Length: 323
Image (cartoon, rainbow, N blue to C red; front, side, top):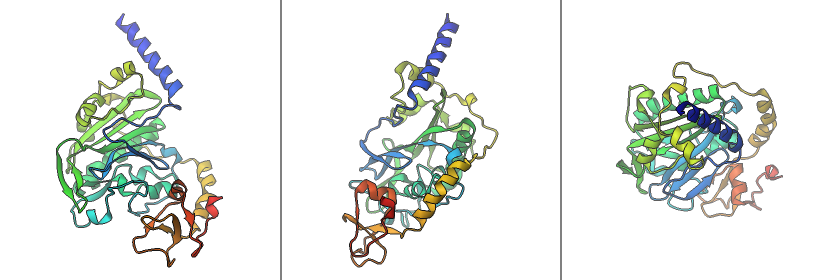
C-alpha cells in the first residue's frame, strides 16, 4: 500500500511540474513587501535593513553570452523607494559588497550584468567569506544548472535573526547567516537549501545543507508556497543530497543562435552614450550636460523605460533604443 501511495505521489508531482511550471510565480513569501523586478531577477527590499530579504531568479547558463564581462558599476537602485544603501556606507567598513544574485549568474546581456550591481542586490559580507566559500557555492549552483538545464534560485542574508553588526551612516545590517535555495523545475524533488555563517570556512559545501523546511523555520520565509501543499510536505522535509551531482564540474553550453541574435542589440547599446539621471530628476542626460547635477547616477536602458524618463532637451542624449 505504501509503495502505491509513493508511486501516485511521484506521478502527481511530475504532472504538477508539467502543468504549472510555466505559469506559476516562484517568488517566496517573506516579511517585507517592497517587491522590485529587474530584467532577470526579483527582490523583496527591506527598508529597515537596507538590503534584500530575498532575491529570486532563474539560472539558465545555456543562455549565457560569453562576451559579457563584469561591469563593476556599483550604484543605488533607482527603483528603491526610500532608505537605500549608499556606496559610502560600505567604504572603509571592512566588508565586501557581496552579491546576492551573482554577477556570474547574470551573463545574459549588458543590462542584466549592469543591474546585478545595484546596491539593493548587495549585502555586507566578510571578505574571507565572500571570496571563498560563498563563491564556491555560487559556482556549484552554476555547475548544477548547466547539468540539469536550469534552476530556480532564491538567496539572501538572514535578517530576522542575530546579526553581526551595522555599517555606514544608514546602518546597513550585517547578517550573521546567509542562505541559498534551489529547485529543479523539471523535478521538484531535486531541491536544496544551504545555511552558512558569514565567515571563512574550509568545510565542504555539503556540510551546510539542510532541508527546506528547516530553513523556512529559521528564516521565516516560505520559499515554495505556490506549490501544492501536499507536494511541499513531501519535497521540503528531506535534504535530497543524493539527487545532486557533487563531483563533476559542468561548463555552460552556450547557444550560438542566442549569442548571434544578441550581437546586433549589444553593439547598438554599446554605441549609445553612458546615460545618467539626478536623484529626483524626470529626465536622463549625457555625462557633460550642464543640467546634470553632482549627485548624478548612471542608469541602464531597462530602468529608463521602467521609470518613464524622457531625454533632456539640452544635451539631447541618443534615444534610438526607445524605438
